[in-house]
Image (cartoon, rainbow, N blue to C red; front, side):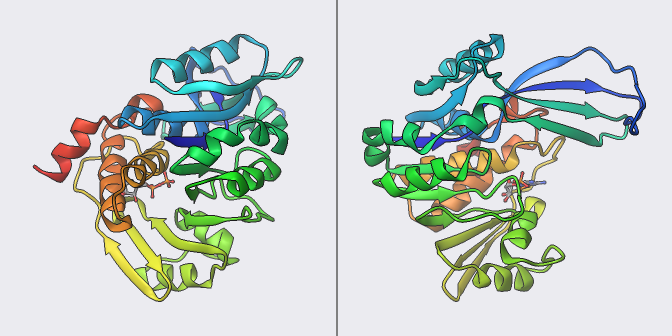
Length: 298
Ligand code: ADP
């Protein structure tokens, strides 16, 4: 079983002719709403690939809560540890997309910001039984810290989105940043470019067992101690890279929970990440198991 501790956001997306400057109002297109949030995306990614997933999180007591719970349930995610938070709205992301495809995003964390260490303590049995516990940075640090402490399996920490003043949870077995997050963690002023620079930055990090750096179209770099291994990206024609990292993390958790070694698991997850770039959107783009297998064994 995989435990995912994290955020659930209802994404509200509209097109805009240009992004408004302060004081300006622009007319957008019709609003589209999609289930999102890194926690929910990673849970759905893992469930869609056949993982048995239990989610620990918070929603509000509004209509968006029903949308989020329904979407998770529909994908087979166990929502028994998702608490409702009276008087607080469910997390939402307000996303404006320009004709050039550039996004501006405002995240209102709402109920996600109310997740507590006690919520994780209440799910202690689930966390102890989990073969992999998956954490990100869209819920309070105290909750991640407690979940990591209670986890009976591998703790996978995705330090996303990159935030200032981050702190790793009490235990991290696998740290999975992208280039930007790695730069933030390593305190670099610019993102590392070459594989050598990425490896050097990963070796500067302390407190994690192994570091798995996702490099978009450049694939993945595995770093363990002084050893590093590059896994090239699978050749696909990307149309939208949204949620590639979430797809990767969910898939990595499934592969590890199935007992695969890190290198094989990372290759499997890279295939899932690649599949997700071939479709638009976040949760709709997440890979199915047959697609991952056929990319690995053409
Ligand atoms: P994030 O969305 O967190 O920035 P990445 O963009 O690094 O994450 O994507 C995660 C993984 O998905 C990559 O390590 C890679 O394996 C796969 N991936 C992402 N973009 C592409 C691409 N253009 N072609 C093939 N694989 C990709």
